[in-house]
Image 1 (cartoon, rainbow, N blue to C red):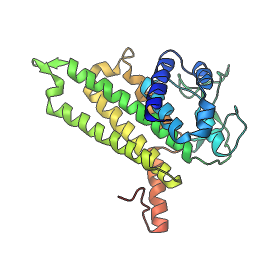
Image 2: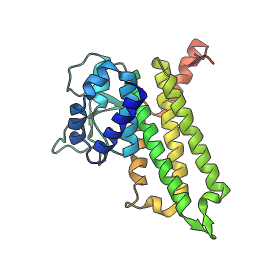
Image 3: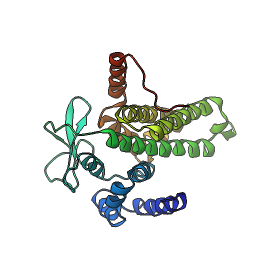
Image 4: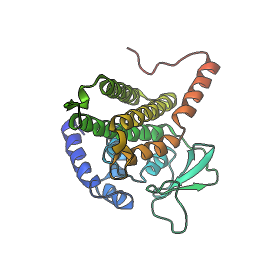
Length: 261
């Protein structure tokens, strides 16, 4: 799939995600050939689809598909996911009546401990999802900073606002660079940690730029902010993964290179 085809497919995905989410989106992605793309070109499919999930604020259970591919699981099944606080959850493909979800918008249900499966590809998928959500939040802050005026000029002209947005952009770009070069388990661990940290920085700074309007239910920011908390909590939070990376480096007494410059 060349760049032109990727752009065309991305436009199609945006239109689909703007009108569907959850099981409805799962079905739409299946009709668009998600399973075939994941099997044939995972290095293209995972960044493209998961980044758009973040940018559009929709959700899907396709993280299960990434994990199933990694360990040859039964297609269509659900995989137990490590969750922050030494807990395990399942991202169900359908709503389960009578079972409360951890998040009001996501079908995440706590379960007993699952089996250990390869996590590298799924961590990269979550990293791209976090990155897309971060860019969506940054775009909200940028639009607000240009439209909101104080003392007769847009707040984007104020140095304090500029510095917050600049720090946010640097964190996002750094996380994306890490995601693009990650090629093994350690790289995926660092990429997920970087994406989670970038999302945390973005959420904090965007809230400050938005001010009071960012606390309202009518503004879309709060949905992205809550979403990145849940995504960061899956398969190791940024804090947990940073500690794990530090322990691995201490044990091996060397810091592996992600890329040779």
